[in-house]
Length: 247
Ligand SMILES: [Fe+2]
Image (cartoon, rainbow, N blue to C red; front, top):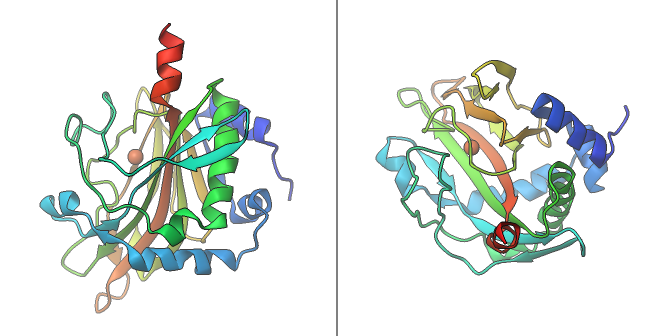
């Protein structure tokens, strides 16, 4: 298997809009082996209920972390915890409504696997756009479903996040059917449909030119709950970078 260089993945994202990276390729990029996802996935047992999704009848757990990535120094640093503000022209459910989520645990924030993911994706974002400083938002999600209660990974439906790069990394899936990810171009044409099933599979999208959504999740064995754990990471120019650009 060949591993694409960062500029090749960037080129693919710019031309096609989306790229599905298999686990073997991501593992190689991050310098980890396939067993890492089980260990990294323990952070998902520490997530907190998403009260905003619960208002819509979906059982979802999450936390939220914010980081800055500086391409010149290849540095990743955490930003003090604050409310999650949905950018304009993105998720219609939550624009202009700040949402308060529990921060990532300290162990999660400092996990070398998270640091490696942020550093790799920061370089990839830089292959998409020349930005001095990136704002990286990290959201681990766990969606649960039971026989009478489908789980909605994206309660807002097909949407964009209002960022440059959007990525979704599968951590674990248990007793689940459905949860199919789709990516569309701006005119609504489907570019890709896939069900992330193997831990370490990452779906990447150029959010400036695509939209995405995930279909409902249901249990395979109706006697047991279904579960889908993913890590969503987005990159957008930081507020400071945007101010410099406007000058
Ligand atoms: Fe999204």
